[in-house]
Image (cartoon, rainbow, N blue to C red; front, side, top):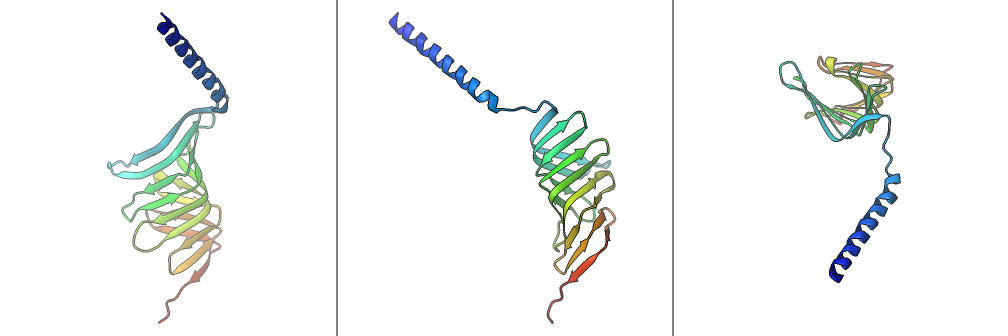
Length: 178
């Protein structure tokens, strides 16, 4: 009987201690009330009509806001798959604008064509429109190719047709010593 009483006292003490720990830690966890859902370790793939991979979005964290129909993403990485060559885009943060079906990326945006030769684009912000394979920026854009550094006040990159347009362009060309 003494053994059962001791065992019961230990169980009651353990339950009491664990319930007080939960009460202490719960106020530290703040769950936003304005989000519909959130995802962690997101790996989102979109396929085109022929069944080939069109683009892939990866992010450690995404949260969706019902009211604005916008999803906020942290450290997004997008891989765009094209017949002319793939592109990779990284940023510190971004938004998926569901109504317009585009992605706004900002803060430390780096877009690079995958391949042997360097073709890298840097900007503070870009908009990626997947349906048109179009990337645009109203912010300053810097293009590094290894042989040149080109700066523009705004840019439009038609990735599918490989047509790039910059406004107020300035360029520095590097020549190898012969």
